[in-house]
Length: 343
Image 1 (spheres, one colour):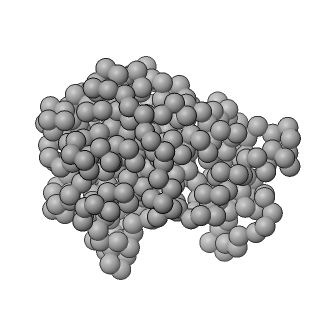
Image 2 (image 1 turned 30 degrees about the horizontal axis):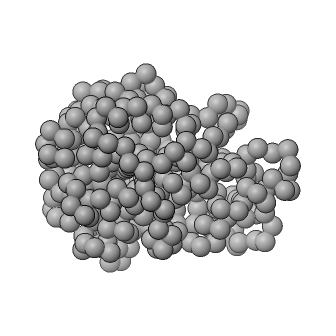
């Protein structure tokens, strides 16, 4: 199995995050990608660079006004606020106020959902490279590889069609699914990140051709809080094709893997032509967000379970933040996946 990665993903260095009313050091940093890249060199066969991102596929998922804001918003912000190094809106739209204004401050709050999703000078090249990696991995699998790993950063599964959320700007998994659907009939997105894939759910909530499954910490106590509950099953033509499997906070291997197994059973029932696997390593017992207590052995077992699905698979990196065992967890997952998938 190859790893797809572009060096532009090492850009987008956000300095701070808002936590408990204070600005503290960011955790979604280039250093987490460097740790994963070193691990990928040990557990995959080669590191390859993607070609340019296919904007026509990205535009299937994301609003063009939103894409224009991601590309140009920081430059406009810098012109207006010359001393600023981060675009972080101070207000956001709500269910009661959803008009798109002309003013930059208003547009920033319209297109960015939360204080975590910060634009800096080189955000656009980074997010475009991240999406390109997902697209290249998908192409390789469509061309016959049993699996490929897209080492994506920034992550993507919280991003909505027209709104950044939770460190995510372009929804890499959804973009991969859109590319896959040009060639195959049915796609499953099986997300094992510890946070619910709320953006992915919203994108496909009314569709029967892309099954969305998310295993994650119970959103009643864990970000993103407002989505990811078990009774969210899809709407209209998509009813029954969205499955949320929330797990009690601070659960260990057995509870988390039981939910993964339930997601695998639903995947097999759907019988997709391709599986998109957003891989978060932030369920780790050592992750700084401290949501779950999954061990490195647990990630190896998870990889074995998911590899045994036996379908062409695109693995897309989502969360997993700096810890002494971040790279080890990727290695153990990949060892397990290869053992049962033959990739």
